[in-house]
Image (tube, rainbow over all chains, first blue to last red; front, side, top):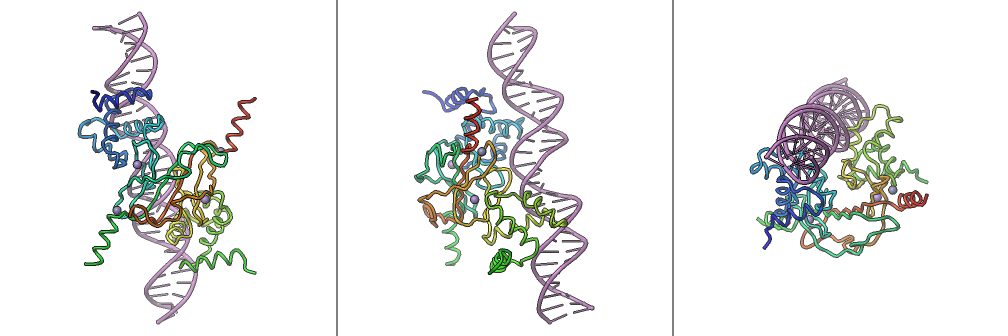
Length: 146
Length: 146
DNA sequence: TTCCATATTTGAAATCATTTTAACCATGAA
DNA sequence: TTCATGGTTAAAATGATTTCAAATATGGAA
Ligand SMILES: [Mn+2]
Ligand SMILES: [Mn+2]
Ligand SMILES: [Zn+2]
Ligand SMILES: [Zn+2]
């Protein structure tokens, strides 16, 4: 029976990254908060309690390293800061402009996992939908009823 | 026979924006350089010759106004700055990570012009593909042949 | 174990796109 | 002419991210 921490340690090693304490903790945070699509700041704030010496720069360095090794996908849907996604399977992202939540959307797309388009080589595919989520829509409707 | 400048003037007025000299010139630039997907800086640099007093702030203000009125679409594919697209028809964007070019990609997408997904209201749909364009691929191939 | 080269972490400073602020200017109605 | 409104401008502020240089940790060779 292998622990989750062990699994993450192996994952880092496989990707050629030394499994330092900071890297492990950052990866653990990403793994535990998939739905949050956390920012550098969220990660830093969450870890600063446990690791008082950790620096912003380390979080930036680590996430850049993770990204280069394909461990993590950047999600730039808000336009103001990068959010990080540990989930590797391709999926769409929905940003609610009311509450700011980022929601994973799983829909099949014909361009899906193509590696080429009109002769251009495809390395990344970002799909960002913006609008108002169903929870905020419901709130709005209830308010209007009043 | 209506001039292009007249057409743009009417367009601004229809959208409830006073057709000032600066706004007209910025819109004209966007119209003439659709393929460039210009940045604020590109627009500023190009116009600074003709309008020596123009300021960056005006270009920012104007593009924000255009965006609010739906005259222009922001393209945030590079992650470092906003590019602007005067073309209104929905289409995908391809960023070449070798040469930096942004290429319009016209492909049908089933989610295409839906107004709703899983109960969430859709206002915007951005589709960003990153990789290496066919021209850069060709160059690379020729180099390897040598 | 001890020593050493190398990789990683750290905090401070720099960068750079964008926004904010406050003054100035143009337009048009009263 | 006076006034209100909206647009333009330059300078300053903001904020996410990167750069830099010093300090520290790590793992392998001796
Ligand atoms: Mn996701
Ligand atoms: Mn385009
Ligand atoms: Zn919402
Ligand atoms: Zn290219």
